[in-house]
Length: 347
Length: 109
Image (cartoon, rainbow over all chains, first blue to last red; front, side, top):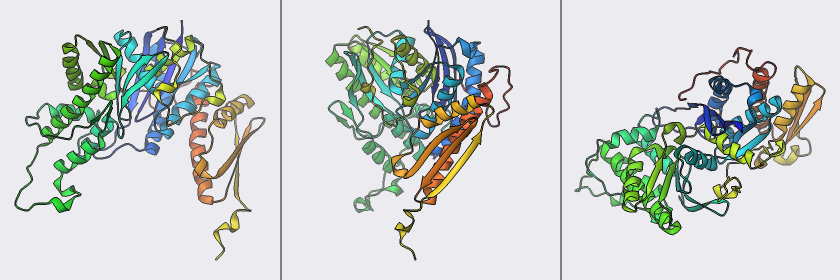
C-alpha cells in the first residue's frame, strides 16, 4: 500500500493529486488562462501557481479525507518544463516533505503521463504517443526504459496549435486546442498544407509559418512573390483549423503506425494535452482498426497535466525502492524520457 | 568616467536576516532554500546560514542589477516556503486558510 501526493506545475496548469494503491482519491487543478492572442510567460505563470498551490493542497487532502500522516510519499515534477513554474511545485513539495517528515521524490513529467495512461486504460505494453504543448514523442518500452522512437525536431504539436489559435485570436479558455477542435468541425474545405515527416521525426514550425501567411496575408514575409493580378484566396478560420488538424494529426498517425509495425505492437496509448482531441483519437482509431489494433485514450481529467499522474508515477518509483535526498530535489528544464530507469516494470 | 571593471574588487553585497517562529522552522526553510543553485549567468554568490531561529542569506554580485534579480527571485521562494510552513506547520487541518491570494476551488476534480 502506497499513498502518494503529487504536485504538478511544469506549464500553465498547477495540480495536486492523491492516489492510494492505484485508487484515485483526489485530483484538483487550476489553469492559468491568458487573454486571446497571448501565450503564458514563465514569470506570470509562476505567480499564478504560487497563489493557487497551497489552496489546492488543502483541497486535495479534504477531498481525499486524509491527514498528512496518512501519506507515504510526496512527489513533484522535476522536469521537463519551464523553470519558474516547476520551482513553485518543488519548493512546496520540499517544505511539506520536511514538515510532515515524508520522503520526497522528483518525477519525470513524461513518465507521469505514460504511467497514468497505463493505469487508467489498463494497456499493458502500448506504443505511446505523447502529444502536448511542450512535447511530441512516439515512445516504446524496451529493456527498462521508455525509448523515444520519434519526436518533433522543432516545436511541439500543441505549441503549433496554441500559436495558431493566437494568430487567429481564439480564446484560451478552456484551452486553445479545444477551441480549434470545435471550430474545425465547421470546416468544409481542405487547404493543402506542407506535410513534414522526416523518417520517424516530425516538424511543425514550417507548417505554422505557412498557415500564418494564409490566415493573414498582410504578414507575408516574402514580398517578392506578390502578384498584383492574382488575388489571394480568402480562407475561413474554420477551414484553416480543420486543415491544420487534419495535416498534423495525419503526420502523428503515420509515425505512430511505423513504430507499431517496428515493435510488432497492436496497442496505442495517446497521452498529453493534445491527446484529448477527439479528432486525433478518431484518426488513430481508423489506423488501428486497419491493423487490427486497439487505441487507448483518456479524458481531459487525466490527459491534461495533473497532479495525480505525478503521484501515481512517484508511487510506482517509491514501491520499487527509489529514494531522493533533499539536496537532489531540484528542478531541471531538460529531462528526457529515456533518462529514467523504469525499474518498476517487470517486463 | 570610471571604467566598468573598477567595481570588480568591491562587489555589491546584501545580507538578509529572516526570523522564524522556531529554530525547527528556520532549519526547514534553510534546507528547502539551499537546494536551488543560482543560475550560472547570473554572476551572484548566494550563501545561506542558520543562526538559531534566524535564516541568514548573504548575496554578493558585481552589478547591482544582478543583485536585485537574485534577491527578488529568492524572496518569491522564501515567501512560498513561509506560507507553506504557516499553513501546514502546526495543526495542518485545524487552521483556516488565511493566506491571502490562495483559493481552495479547483477547475476540475
